[in-house]
Length: 607
Image (spheres, one colour):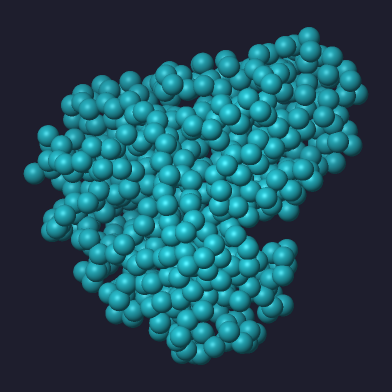
């Protein structure tokens, strides 16, 4: 058995005239040696995908666990955006970049290139060879449509401040149009080169232009030519755009599990495509190598995503029903069971860019609202939450490097963590203090035994144990902790505010400004309704700079304010566990939300 305890490394990548600061993690962070491994696998020379040289696609199938059903070809809507859906779609849809194992922004040179001509002018060039699997070239029309989905409002105008109601149900809302109201510019609909002129600097400029879906399919489905669709976007033609939005929002939903649509509707621009008849409802989705892919050939002909829950994955790996697993919510029992498989598997463990937290509900009906118990009630709760016990009992048995996390925008394994936390947090909630919690509870004016519902997505044994530990401690302070775990928590309770404290995790990547959507007053993921002018101003300054020093200073401001006003309570970085059959080479764990499949096209059977 190969067990690697991976060490932290810090990476930064330069792009054009600007600098994008990338984060790193112990999980997947030490892939730094070049050359071939003893088993014939090819080692990477950094966090990006390895250069495998000339690859001949081998017959055979590699099977990986993916716990949820496929439900859309368009995984970019607010209703379909999911790491499970993306695990499949990212093998089919190309992009200028991808996140490496530590959050580094890696460039896909086969797809094309991009260059900062100035801090606000970025030129993109798509490879001349880049085509959809139906033979249509990938071109400007695809990226203009991608911009339109994040810029055009229901009133058929271009967003002024990203607060209007969008025409397209894009998960990112109107953010791109807010930065680039004029849209990308090119010489023609079929151009391979286009330019973005931003109105202001964006810290995450490298990742704003992301996945593009086939504009020619949308055009065909609404009865216009691609050129006419491009003209309609340029001229804000409401009749055409409303039809385009309806198809973009709904036309790619896969509403009959097990029934793939006509391949003409779902062309591939990546190394894999849907295999004919490759969807077995509730069982698996199979991809097959795209014969017309112009980039590095996938190492294996087919890749099957099997719908097996975490608690069954280790047995499936042992039986040969799976080749690669990444169980959710791993426990010490997970590790011991994998270790029991001996040399038949490889195991990687370490911290990830996913982190657990407790968030307060600031709505008027919540005990923690400023109009009710307010800050004193939140302080009482923070003083009784046994964070160290939770980490010691639930996380350290899986990852011995685990620590209590005292920040939200930097991780314990990053080089600026100590600098940020020392400036923002004085350790006041490091240890449980029931007496101090009781005093704050009394100050809050809440009645003894006030019920505090801690909501989370159930079933989840680790979170159930977390709530149990909090109840054993915080009931002594005057609260009555209620386990409000629910299988519909994300669908109903979280959005409806039916909780006092939400227990869940955010999945990170290399994005610098992702936290703005969580903590800013108008943030789309600010579920608890928190509002703070200092935090809003700090995010504005941070997001409009490409200077890592500015990012660090503004993170200090954000973190201090979030601690002083108690937006919520960070707990720990999630431990990651990846296990794979020793017969499969080039499986590499990653700390980012892309999951272990991030380089699945490089997986190959050992010869």
